[in-house]
Length: 402
Image (cartoon, rainbow, N blue to C red; front, side, top):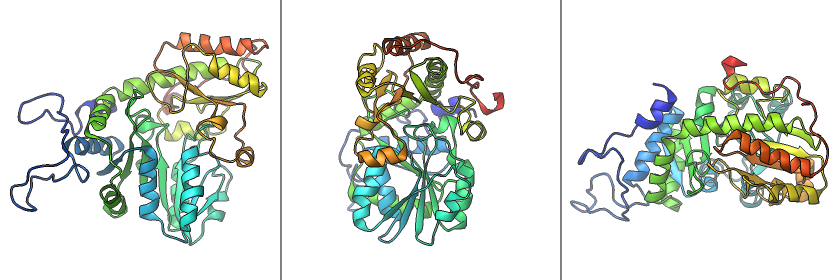
C-alpha cells in the first residue's frame, strides 16, 4: 500500500454503528461504566479517548510501528521521553543544531534534575563514538535540523549509540514520515511536533511519541496518563482530518522550498542557503540516501546588517512573520530573536546561529508568487541577482532521481 493510500485507509474504518466515513469526535470527559471498574475500554478521557486512540493508531501505522502516545504539545512529548527514560546522572547527547525549545528543556529543566547534556557534531567522523560513555542514556537526533537544515546519518548514529548501550530518539518533525522513516534506520523512538506538518493548518498544538518496543514505550505511556498532558478530542479530530492530505501537502511544500532555494542561491545578498536538496549541501548525499524527498524547509543567511534582516522578514506579502512551520500558509522567522531566543547569545554564536539567519517555511501557495515575494525583498536590500553560486542546482525529489 502506497503512502498516500495509507493516510486515508490505515486504522481509519468507517464508524461501525452508523457507517459514517468520518469518525465522530468523542467530546466527553468520562464514560459510563457497567460495574465498578468494568467498562468498555474507556473510563476517563485523560487516560484514553476514542478519538485520540484512533489518531495514535494512524500515526503509529504511518511510522511503521505499534506504539504511539499523543501529548498537548511537541515539548510535552519530549518532556515525557526525557522524564521517562533518564535518571539523575544520565547523559543526553545532542547535535549543535536543535530546536530552541529542546535546548531549553535540556539545559534549563533537566539539568536541574541531574541530567547532563553534551553537544556533539555528528557530522565529524568518530566524534559521536568518542563522546559516548556508560552514562549516555539517549542520543537525540534532528535530521534535517532546526534551523540550519543539517543532515546526519541516522543509521550510523544508531549503530554507534546501540553499541554503547544508548537509545536513539529522532525528531522527525521536519522530514515527516512521508520523506523519512527513522525506525527503518534503527531509531528506538520518534518524536513529532504534530502542530507542524502532520496537522498542517496552523490550528492545532500537539505532540507525539512513537516507539517500536513496548519496553521503551511503557514509561512514556505511563506519564501520558499520570501527568495528564494530553490533547483534546477536537484537536485529535483536526489532526486526523489534516493527515488525509499529508502527502499532497508535504510534496507541495518541498517543491516550493526547492524553488525558493534555487532563487535565493542566485542573489548577491544571500551569503548561504541551507537546503539539503542543493547538491552542494554538505549532507546532500546522506539525505538522498535516507530520505525520499528533501523536505519543505529552508534557511538563508543574509549578507545584510540586522536592521535590513528585520526589514526583510517583516515586509513580505505572502510570508507571515511568525513562529512554527509546516502550515498551508507560508511563514518566515528570524530564529535568533524568535524560535531560538531562549538560547543565550554567546551560545548561539558558538553554535553558528547568527542574527542574519532567516528561516522560511513555504506553504502550499504557488511557487511563482513565493519566489517573487522573496526576490523582491532581497532586491530591496540592494545588490543584483547573480548567476547561482550553487552551480549544479537543486536535485529532483526522491533519492532514486539524484
